[in-house]
Image (cartoon, rainbow, N blue to C red; front, side, top):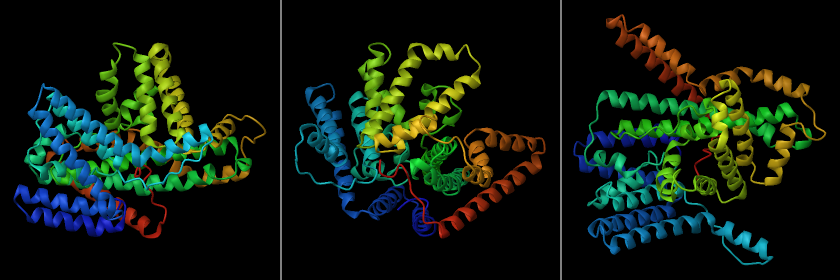
Length: 472
C-alpha cells in the first residue's frame, strides 16, 4: 500500500484515524497504531512482516543487554551482535544475488543463487534499529523496557517503507506520551496533502514526460531532448521523495509525532556538499554520525572517509554498479570541493557555482537512472553533443511548448519562491488582526481542498503511480 492510493486515502487512513481517536488511553492508541502499521506493511507482501517483527525483537533484547552491561565486554558484544544480525539480513536480501552474480562474472563460474524479492523498506527500518542499538551503547538514550513500544517505533507506518529515517531518541518521549491539538492536526493535514500534491500532480507528470525521452532509442534522441528528459527525471525523483517525506511528516503530526525535515530545497544549492545537506537529510546525518565521524571525520584521513561514506551511500540505494558509480561520483565531487573548489566558489558569482551544481546533479541522475552503465555513458555523450547527434528537432520543440507551463511550475516549486510569496501574503494580513485568522484559514482550506480534489481525480484515471524510493 502506498500513501498516494485511493485505498489508503479513503479507506485505510480514515478508519485508522477514527479508531485511534475513539481511544483516549495512550496504551490503546499505541496498539491501534501497531496493528494498523503491521496491516499496512503486510498489505502487499504479508510474508515479510515476520522479518520486520524479527528485526524489532532482536534489537529490543539487544538494547536491554547493552544497557544492563554498560561499560562491560558483554555490552560491546551485544552491540556487535546487533550490527552483524541487522547488516546480514540486509545484505542477504538486498545484495546476495548481486554478490554471487559478480563472483560468477569475475571467475567465469556458474554458482547457483535464488533471487529474493526485496522486502519493502528494509533499508530504512534496518538503519532505524541500528541507530537505536548504537545510541543505547553510547548512552544517548535509555533502552525501551516495553516491547510493544519498541515495536511501535520500528513499525509505525508513517515512515516505515520510505523514510525519513527516524531515530528512537527523536520520538522516545512521544512514544510515552503525545499531546495532540487541533493546530497540530491542521498542520498535519495540510502537510500531508501538500506532499500528496507533489507526488501525484508533479512527480507522476514529470515521470511520464521523462520516460518519453529516457526510454526511447538513443538514435532518435537529440541533445535538447536528453537534457529535457533528465531534468524531468530530476523533478520526478525530488517531488516523489520529498512528497513522500511531507506525507510522512504530516501523518506523524496528526497522530502526535514530530519527525525531522528530510528536504530543504536541494536544487538551489551551490555545491555538491550543500546539495547533500539539503537532500535526504536523515540518510546523510545517519552516515555522518555512525560512519563518517567514527572513522575520523575531518580530523583524520578526511578524503578516505568521504570515499567510504559515498561508496556505502551509493550501495545503500541499490544492488547495482550504477548506484555505486553514482555514489562515488558525488564522493569525488565533494572531495574536490573540500580540497579547493569551495574556496573558488566563495570568490566567483553565485550563479556560476549554482550552474555547476545543476549540471553535476543532472549528470549524477543519469548514473542513478540507467542500471546499464553503458547506456548511461552513451546518454551523457548525447547530452554533451558527442558523436553524430542532432542538437534539436521540430518534434522536441512542439513537445517542449506543450509542457512549458508544467516545466515552469515544477521549476518554481523546486525553490522557496512560492513559499515566500505565500508568507508575504499572510504577513500582509497581520495588520488586520481580526481578519487574519479567518482569511488565512479560508485560503488554506481552499488550497488543501483543490489539491486533494485534483490529486484524487488524477489517481482515478492514472495508472502510472510509482514510488521511486519504495524498494530502497
